[in-house]
Length: 284
Ligand SMILES: Cc1cc2nc3c(=O)[nH]c(=O)nc-3n(C[C@H](O)[C@H](O)[C@H](O)COP(=O)(O)O)c2cc1C
Image 1 (cartoon, rainbow, N blue to C red):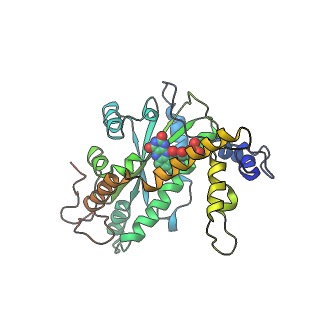
Image 2: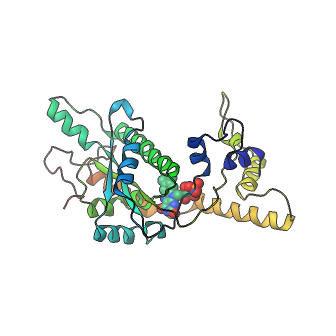
């Protein structure tokens, strides 16, 4: 592994010191096992308030957070999300792109709502992701664990139905929050020098890719046979991600939800909040 990556994950690089925010960022790892105890409501409230403090495009607040606490609903989400262990014993928040609020405000203020299409999706996704990650870091700082659940966006049509989401609201990602029952080491990352470009974009060479794969496999020397096998494992993992067809059903579900929620960027026949048929397929 490169020195750069090692320093980053251990938090002992220049300027990282004992800064608590830096420590929370550097030590965080996704948590998939939780103690079976509820998070105190005031802690959850504090975390949601931390999410809200994230920057938001033009003060637009183009997102919503849906806290799921009904046990029956949680059980259904657990099934839809392929029974992921991280969803057991944890709190669950669904992060949504939300342009419905903007519609309502536009009507209230007597102005036209022009935000739509790709821009709405871009603004909403950025806002939502910043809020979610604020919550993740705040939770890490409080000694709590979190794990994103991507199936929420990957089964967007099913989630819209389950949560009765109205037009203008699109579920993108879920987040589990709770008391960790495991303490995994931070996972390695592609070394910083391959992720940062200076003034001009530079493609990785085949040698760079091999070097990055070694770094991702955590290879720092030792038995060459073991190194080769770990590097091969990393290569096959990434090949699987890159050529995987697992996202195709997700793509279909997402497209369906974009239409049902009136948020299809190419203007596919889709109702908008405040118009006839505003509730879309997502609403029961
Ligand atoms: C949008 C998004 C969706 C994710 N979905 C899942 C998921 O469904 N299940 C899961 O176990 N981890 C999920 N993860 C967590 C990633 O697997 C994890 O962040 C990655 O392996 C890096 O590990 P780390 O978070 O411990 O650093 C997701 C992460 C992101 C950003």
